[in-house]
Image (tube, rainbow, N blue to C red; front, side, top):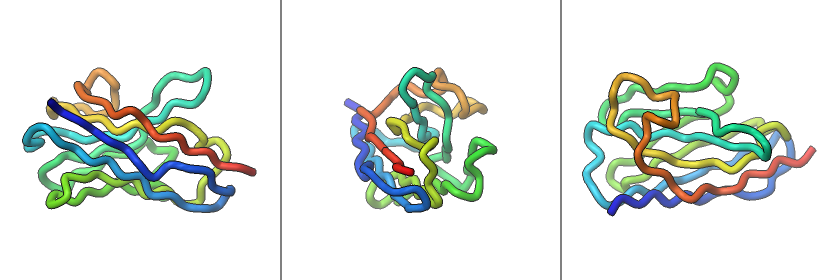
Length: 124
């Protein structure tokens, strides 16, 4: 079955950086979009970034453009989220997700598979 396993979260001071990884397994992901979402306590899960498994198209929430970068390594079946200049408001559980690309990437309903999440905590 499909598995998405995130890693790389942790505690970092404001202004620092973290790189999250998501190893995907269990099927061929050609035609899929891979996304990163986050959920802070008491808030809804929100879109962060996405990219299609094939090709170079990337998508970001406007508020994070320039600080966060999504990338992939097909040989390792891994998606990354590089997060720079972190702020306390970036504190959340970050989730990796996968879904068959259907033209949109911003909604949780666009994704069929989810990882277990990795905690990112940014201290001030």
